[in-house]
Image (cartoon, rainbow, N blue to C red; front, side, top):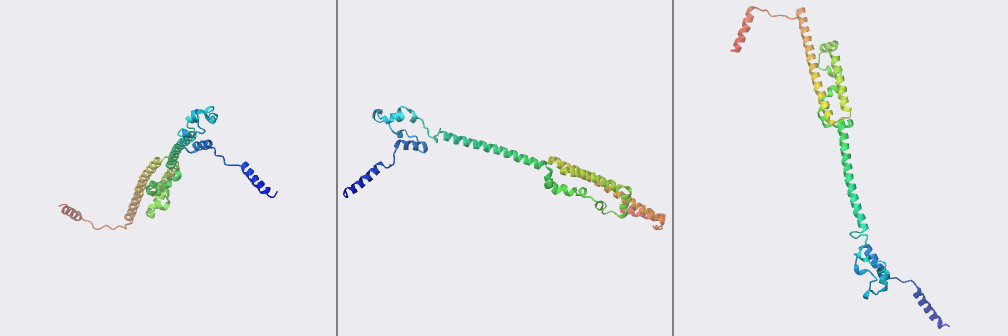
Amino acid sequence: MKILLPFLIVLLLLLQHGFAQSVVQDQSLRYQQERMVYLQWDQKKFAPTAGFLSLNPYYWLVWGLFHPDYHNTDRRPLSPAGPQTQRLALVAALNATDNNYKLQSDTVRNTALSEIANQSALVTDADPLWQLYYKSELDPVINHSQAGILAGLSPAVTQELLTDGLYTWYKNELDMLKERIDAAHTTNMDRGSRILAYHRYLIEYRKLAGVWAIRTSAAAKTQQMTANQQHLKTGAVTLSAWTPQTDIAIANRVLLHVQ
């Protein structure tokens, strides 16, 4: 019994090894996996093959009876005409279309932003022409005050302008012009129209300032003439002694100068 025990153990091990799982090498399946995944569609790797005189029964069971033309068409997903290749080409075409749409939408967006910046009143303070020229030129209208309007005038002329209503007229004109400038500055409009409005109001202001200068100068002349008349009436002006010889001497000096 002790002698048979080792033989029984060896026999059991052999039986266990015989019924255990083993690696299956299916060449047909391996070829199919290779050509469907990454290798070329090789006509020589369709196993089982037909064999001598096409007598291989496995060939007829796998290919000959049910799929006789299977190997004639490249069925790889990534073949030149495969479904996955077509999907990738379609994805690339759709990406190109999306990029074109995105480019067009970006162009429309940039155009819209440019139009908004061109017409919006929110960015008028940053306009270069306004900052460099029209803001300073129109400042006497936008920030006018009584002290600024009457600056440089004598008290007598100032009093006359206030009494005659010239100051009130000029201030009302500046107020109306200021309202129009503020409207052009804060209203949504085309930038070109806004600049033309600034220029038109600047011309109007210069004409108005010219009229004001003429009237203030006339008021100053009137004050000077009134003062001179008062001096004459009160005898504050002394006249030098005059004789006919005085006029003759003056005429002779003029003739000498002309010669």
